[in-house]
Length: 427
Image (cartoon, rainbow, N blue to C red; front, side):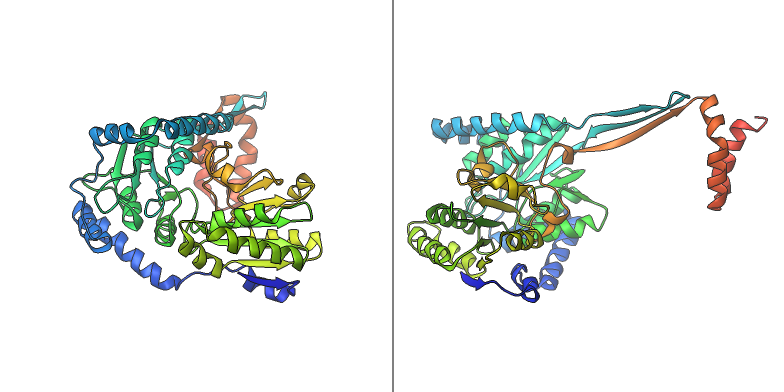
């Protein structure tokens, strides 16, 4: 984990850059996968599973018996933890339902903006070395609150063709309609195009690795709807003299253990604290079961020393982190000046882990600097707005001169005639 002391602004572009492999190579690979699934359906999915994972599940769809067996194997303590997190996440998201807007001009025109749910939500839950059953809650709960009629879920199985018990339990708790043993870019392709066994989704949600993220990005350019480009995870911590080095180190490590392409950043004011945190990282990571993954993530991670708080905040907004932890004495003041972050954690007792699991906020967030324009997942992401308008004859008559004048100025004569025929015509 490299340390930089008050770097000049001309170095900031390099320091805010995420370490990514050749994008063109990934684009080519993922484009090929998408096309194979689009044209080959289930047969292509089976072939890709064999090529990439080394095995093909007997059936992509998870059976009711598999779900029941998984629930029976889960310790009651974990079930209770998942249920408590479910309740808290539901409570927060239930308050996010967007309100209908109605405007009546009092002259016969009524305008309305009404939100309706996505018909079929396709949910992707990462598996692999760390099956993220918490992501099931983060995706399925807002979809339920929004009222999506159908919710399907894809997640990669293990080498025995099994999905993690906790993922199946969480999916069952959330009332998921169908679960499929499928991961990677091929799973995104299946939900986008539909196959013989997997229905086409109207919008695709969920985080994933670089291949999953690239598949979603490519599909979004082809008129498919996605939630956001959520790729490799990242965290930034801003720490002042009130911060504890052991807490900060633990927060950085909690993000680094997500995967070798994760990134952890620390902004602080002095070298002594930076060295203290680095020593804590060495001590704590030795006790972690995923130390090798952590080590690779830390190679791309940084500690940056800025003496001035204003500079720290400017750099943070430039970086636009997925997660931002403010381990400072007055976190509310700093948070008010942050304009680019996926989710902010205020104070020394608000670890990012709380948001990942059970505080109530959503952990599906924009990455790679896209928090400068994208929002984290919420109920509104599973809905879309439809506007209505209704005019009386008198209302249209009053607006006719305005509409006709504007339409003719744009050279759109038929638009003007659609009004003339009603108000001035003989029909």
